[in-house]
Image 1 (tube, rainbow, N blue to C red):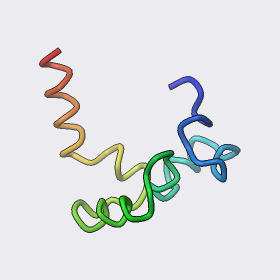
Image 2 (image 1 turned 135 degrees about the horizontal axis):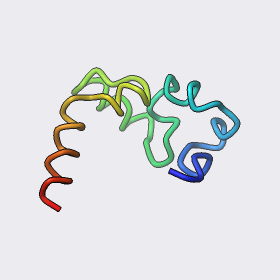
Image 3 (image 1 turned 120 degrees about the vertical axis):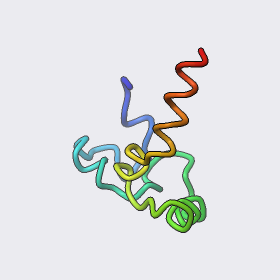
Image 4 (image 1 turned 90 degrees about the vertical axis):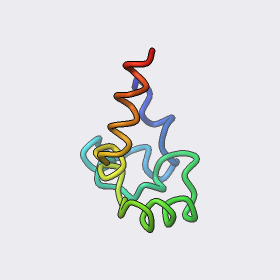
Length: 68
């Protein structure tokens, strides 16, 4: 991932990777509070860790890698 600070909002740039994993999903650049609410409503995703370990996202990623 290289520059992790470039992938999170400024308020989270000085956090450890462990802290980022448990940060709210809107800590990721480009994810708004509204987007975060939709992820919570649809998949009960509240944190970056939840997003990164969500089975549907992992399945989609695996299918895409196999297709490539």
